[in-house]
Structure formats: C-alpha cells, structure tokens
Image 1 (cartoon, rainbow, N blue to C red):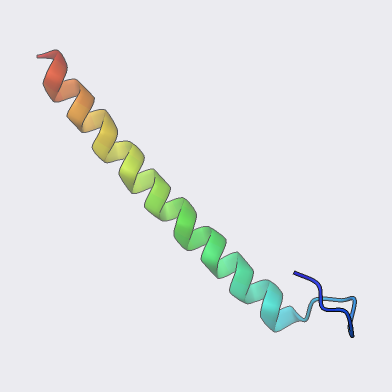
Image 2: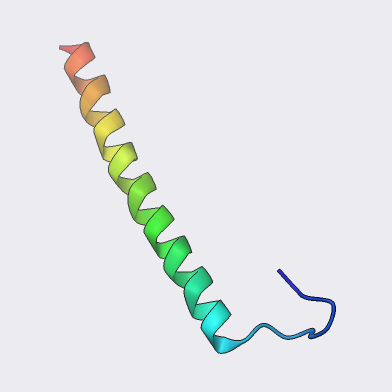
Length: 44
C-alpha cells in the first residue's frame, strides 16, 4: 500500500489498516464459531 510519491505509510493509514484487520479477524472468529455450532448439530 505504498504510494510512489511517499515511501512511508502515515500513522492514520496504519491505524485504519489495523482497524480493518481487527474487524476482519472478529468476523472470522464469529464465522468460525457458527461453523463449529453447525458441525456439532450435524453430529448429533
């Protein structure tokens, strides 16, 4: 995510990316939990 005119990422950009990553990780964790629950229900 580097621009040609400036080689460093700003703090704001870094924070925004971190927020997106955290949000994505939470979504994945929720989906993982749903999947586990679904698999458990099929095993019964």
